Image (cartoon, rainbow over all chains, first blue to last red):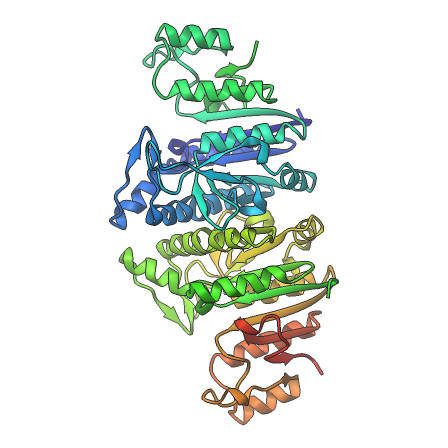
Amino acid sequence: MKDIINVIKIGGNVIDDSVALSAFLTDFAAIEGSKVLVHGGGREATRLSARLDIQSKMIDGRRVTDDETLDVVAMVYAGLLNKRIVAALQARGCQAVGLSGADGDLIPATRRAAEPIDYGNVGDIDADRISDRFLDTLFKAGYTPVVCAICHDRHGHLLNCNADSVAAALAVGASRLGRVRLTYCFEQPGVMTDLTDESSVVPLVTPAIFDELRSSGRVSGGMLPKLSNALRCSADGVGEVRICRATDLCTSGGTIVRQA
Amino acid sequence: MKDIINVIKIGGNVIDDSVALSAFLTDFAAIEGSKVLVHGGGREATRLSARLDIQSKMIDGRRVTDDETLDVVAMVYAGLLNKRIVAALQARGCQAVGLSGADGDLIPATRRAAEPIDYGNVGDIDADRISDRFLDTLFKAGYTPVVCAICHDRHGHLLNCNADSVAAALAVGASRLGRVRLTYCFEQPGVMTDLTDESSVVPLVTPAIFDELRSSGRVSGGMLPKLSNALRCSADGVGEVRICRATDLCTSGGTIVRQA
């Protein structure tokens, strides 16, 4: 296990539940070797926006990020949640270092074009530009990056990025340093063909199986972009992607996504 | 100059003024060699508290930090201001890495006793516990830590610390790695014996001069703890401490504090 770099993404539902988060962080801290934790936190951002009378506007699940909203997500993701997670991991003996994509130029991003939809201060990431040098510096010294999805454009502007995409790009970037395992932890036990039946988890998704699941309609909605993201990662140097429940981090449960 | 580690503290008044901050960051980015930037940001925290209907309570210039206020300062210092500064430095070619004292266990702190005054989640720092290993890792790889005054107790709790004290502790910690110059940048041109007369700047403060300035009443108020802090640093391995105006960062202006 020790030669594998684990990149793990934890979703907002776990971050929102302090008991579940605590259990997850204990499991994460116990993983040996180099690892990265990527976290979201959209619900907390929506709550702070509401308290500040800033309207949260989502299009296709992406937050429209005007200047005021950028301040909110920078505060919530890079400040509140990131530092809470870091302090909790430190208490568990994990040498966590909380980062945004601006820090150490870890994740340069490009502001998304205002057409066809103007998302404001939202960025897209190119995995080729991930700073594997910074990751390598931290890994070699035994530090564990804890990364939120606030990135920068290298011209002084912060950009709000998608945390799933940040995890994917970091995994592809880290694959230049060693073998990577990317794990998406979320509220379901894996990719399910029947959302009411936990035994319907698909154990393996390859490109051929993905095409079948999509065309038959057995998998739909937000899982489709997650799966096509995961398939792209597995093609881009990340050997294996797993999609599982946060409580299954240290098991082999969930759905494995790979090329064959 | 290259063998000196510069630790520079920038006060809230400059952070509050985007033009002044921009000029300061250009000067800071141009400094060669290993360096650390420590920043405050209390006014922005007070503004966010007001917007959230959280009363800001200060005793002797220190913020009483209940749980809600801790969230505010973590968001403002570690999120909003820290990441803005990092992005601006990155745009100036400086490989900035924004950190709290929890990250990499950089600055362990101890929660202050509730007697005689209960400041809540406020911590005090012991310079002996500063992680010079983490500083060294970053310096050797060419990274510049940008540090806010949110620290941790190693048991999972964040603590609000004084940014002047954070700068002093980091300077003493860094002095185990090399020769350190600590600079406090603030709104005045140095230690003044007459606050209405800029020509009254005291060029040099030693322990003997400090005693004279204090007993004669020529220096008083908030400058006294700043000076005694600076004198302690210069006794604890930091060769020289300078107190100057932010615009004087790249000059030799201001007040030099040293042992003799």
